[in-house]
Image (cartoon, rainbow, N blue to C red):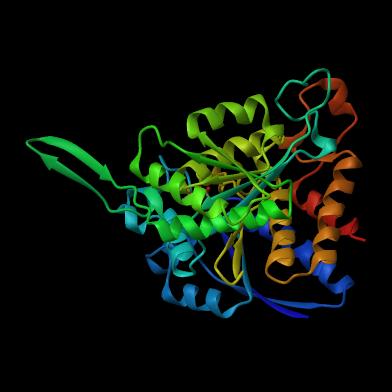
Length: 368
Ligand code: IPM
Ligand code: MG
């Protein structure tokens, strides 16, 4: 197979983690007899520096013409970076929201599972004397809701007022609900739909449409969970969840929470798909400007995102398994980036600290 992948290294640690994901991709694809060509494109802060805007038509066109998009992270320090002096629609994040919309990537999949090897890094206490063990996937609606509604700030009688609007129509809810139920059919057949139906109209419509979709999936158990309760359940008992279906903002927040219980935010991969499984693959974490350029970032979330790309956009299941197994093997050999080092001194002694490049190389070496 010959793959063409548009590549957005982005800002902050983005270029460092993408370099390692590419090394791993190159290694696995060569081993399995495929070729890959990358087309580098700019988006976010680096695009602002070059073109004055976070997203250009050319970037969108190149992304569309590729078979998939691999991305690192975008954005900078929101208090010190000059990018955040620009009007909101010209800031780095507007580029990310814009490319998701332009490519129709409404389905964001964020799997959060605890590697056995990292159970010591999980901040949750053991349950009934047992190590934690959970495996859930957040299905986040990505091109609607509060992040895409009309917004503005106005001054009335000397008082500043900001307005954001949350909008969902039934079609947007239906298609993401179907995604969630289809995924549940291939897993443990449970969907937990997250909303705030005790307050919000968008949530009441969400609940109604999700219930309608559920009728076509009689084997799947559906439960409705209020978002505040869901935040609590995630740190209390994440084992209860299989597929967690959320609107845009709730999914954004809950996926950061879910990533932390896997040991580090540096572990959570993501796929953003359109109706034809064209996808953009990026870690769920941000650009971590505080550690950029130091070669200490954890590239695993990006490497696992590349594995998702092989699985979802190219149907290369063996190759995706090979990458995931290599990550697992590397962790079981005790290799850790700094974010994954156990706090306990005795446990830490059993681990070997690696740089970002060191981790990428080890994982590439471990590909079978
Ligand atoms: C994410 C990020 C983005 C989002 C930001 C950078 C716009 O937090 O991918 O979770 O909110 O979607
Ligand atoms: Mg986020």
